[in-house]
Structure formats: C-alpha cells, structure tokens
Image (cartoon, rainbow, N blue to C red; front, side, top):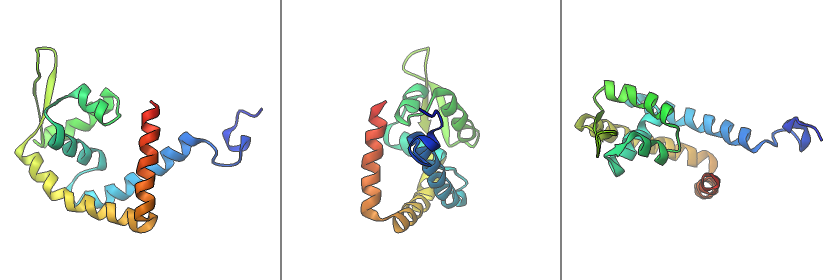
Length: 145
C-alpha cells in the first residue's frame, strides 16, 4: 500500500489536508472583512468568547477555542497591548484571568457587523443550508478529539 495519501484513494483523499485547506480559505475571507476593524479572525473569536464566557484562565480559553496554550498566548499579546483584553490575577495565585476591557467590548461591537458580512458572504457562496450542515459536520469532527 502506498504511503502517499494523494495516490492511495485519489487526489485530495487526506481528510486533515482538506479540512486545513478549507479552514485557511475561510479564515482569509473572514480576515478580509474584519481587517476594517483592525482584527484578525482569531482575535475576533477571542473577544467574542470572553464577552460570552469570561473571565477565563488562559488554559480555559485555549480549551474552549480548541487551541494550544502557546498559540492562545500569542493571539492574546496584541489584544493585551491594545488594551482590549486585561490579564489579571485568577481564581488562585497560580492562574491568570482574562477579561474583556471596555475598549475590547467596543472593538467587538465595531467588528460584529463586519463578521456578519463575512458570514453572509460565506453563506451566499456556499449556501445557507449547506453552511449549517457544514457546521454540524465540523462539530462532529471536533468531538472526535
């Protein structure tokens, strides 16, 4: 049996590659829309998650966003530097808690219509029903972990 996934069952047979490639394309679409607010997709997601569920420890945020802690820390640096997220003491002396600042809430409100434009553009090209089905299928992929 061939070890090359592109020849074992036809080109593009690698599930991981297909998911990652599609994710990169979707991220670029959302990044283009969110750029007018000075945010990237991951940054918008951090602000939205903290708005809904914060304050959170960095490890809790990483788990909720399905990111490793190092990547989450890198995503937080510019948000903290711009005063959108505050990193302060956590529930105990060993943890740090992330909180959305007033400026972060204002930035989230500025970016929300841009995110909706990206959402609408994706669904216009892919199909509203198909996008809902895709989210459900990807939730099942997420649950495999």
